[in-house]
Length: 333
Image 1: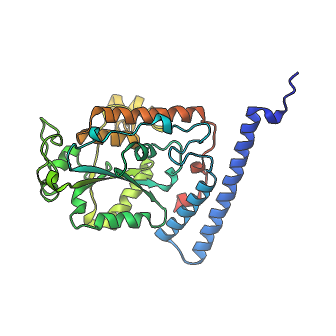
Image 2: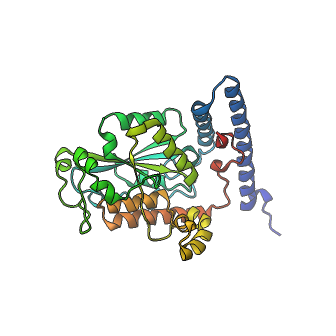
Image 3: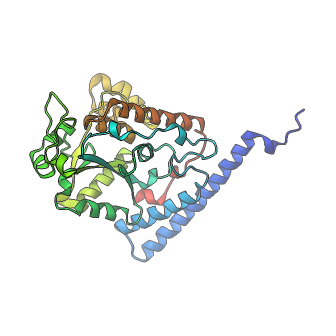
C-alpha cells in the first residue's frame, strides 16, 4: 500500500486549486453585481457604467492572477513561454526606412490576462516603441486613444484600423489612396511591387509613422469596439483595412470554434467560408506586416509563437479562466 496522503496526490491538489478559483470567481461575481446595482441606483448608466464595471472586473482578475507571468499571462511557475518567444529584429520589420509602423492594440477587457490571447505575443515580440496597449473598458483608456488619434488634424489619414468592417479596403488600396498618400507620404504600390521596400517620397524624408489600430477580441466584441471608435471619432475615424487570408488559422480557439465552418463553408463558398478563415489577432498582424514590406520570417516567427502558446494551453486546458465567468454583469452592458 502507498503511504502517500490523498492531499499529496497531484490530482487532489488540482481539484483544490480549481475549487479555490471557483470560490474567487463567485465572490468576484457577487461584488460586480453589487457594484452594478449601486451604480444604477446612483443614476450611472451607458458608457460610464460599462467602464466602471469593466474596470472593477479587471481589478478582480488581476488580484486573482498573481501566479501568472506579467508578460505571457501563463502560470509563471509551470507555463511561462517568455523564453521561447523571440524578439523580432527591426531590420526584418516594415518598412526599412524612416516611415515606420506602430501598432496600437485596443484589447477588449475580457481578453486581458487571458492566457489564450495572442495580441500579448505582439507586445512582447515587437521591439520597444513598436506597440502599445489600450484596454477597451478600462477607465480612461479609450479617451486616451481617441486623444492620440486626434492630436494632429492629419493623423487619421495616416492611421488604419485592422478590421473587416464597412467599406473596408485592402492594404494595397489604402497605400494607393490619393488623399492618404499626398497628406501622409505613404508609398503607392502597384501589381509588380509592394512599394514599401523602395522609395517612400516625402514620408521617408519626414520620418512619418503609420499607426495601425488593432482590434483584439472575439468577433462580436471587436465589432463593438469598431462601432465605439466610429461613434467617438466621426469623420476622423481611421479607414478600415481588411486582410484576405488564404489559409486556416493555427490559433487554438479558432480551430475549435470554426472547425464546422471550415469543413462545410469552404466547399460551397457560403458565408461560413469567411468565418472559417478568420485568424487570430497575432496572425492578422503578421500578415499585415508582410504586406507592408516585412520579411516572411516575421510572419513565420509570430505564427510559431502562436503555436507555442497553443501547446501550453493544451497542457493546462483544465485550468479555469477568470475571463470566462458565466453570467458576468459586464457582458450585458
